[in-house]
Length: 231
Image (cartoon, rainbow, N blue to C red):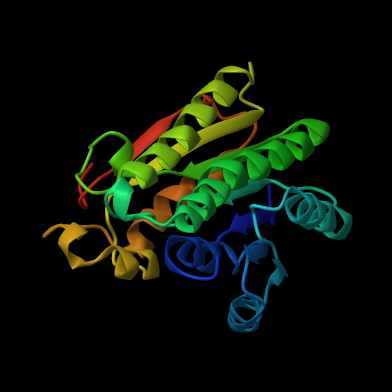
C-alpha cells in the first residue's frame, strides 16, 4: 500500500517512542504527547509531525485527530500507548492521583478509540492497537487502581472489536509485561521481572498489527500477550 499515516498516542517515551521509530522511515507518523517540550524533542529527532494532546481532554483528542486528517487525508492506524501508573495500596494513593489515573487510562482511552474509529469508519479501513498490560491477566499485589483502569481498556477494546463486523477496520490489543521504560522507573525495580522484553522488541509486534492491510484475513479483537519476554 506504500506510505501510510499512523498516529502514535503516548509517543514521547517507552513503547510509543519505539513504535514511532520503527514506522517513521517508511510512513507518515504523527506523535501525540501531553508535554510540549517532549513532543518537540521527538519530532525533531524523528523528523515527523506531532501535537500536544492531553488524552484526558476530549476536545484535545478530537482536535488532534482532525488535524491529522486535515493534513494527510487519512489515518491508516492508531497505536494507543498512553498510560499513567498508579501503584500502591488504595489507601496510600491520593485522591488526585486516582483521579488522574482514571482520566488518563479510562477516559483518555475511550476518547482516543472514539475518535480513531470515527475516522477509520468514515474512510472504510484502518487498524487500532491498544496497549494494555499483563496486569490485566496476571494480578499483582499493590496495583489495584492501575489494574482496574487497564482492565477497563481491555474490556472496551473487546466490545468494540466485536462491533466491527469486518476486517476492514481492525481493533486489537497487546499486553506487554513489565519493560524498562520511564513508566517502569516510576513503578520501581521490584515489578521488573528477571526476564523481560525491551520496548523495541514489543514495538515490532505493535507495528506488525498496525501494518495489516484491509483485506488481510485477520480477526478484529485479536489479543496478543507478551509477558516477561516470552510468548
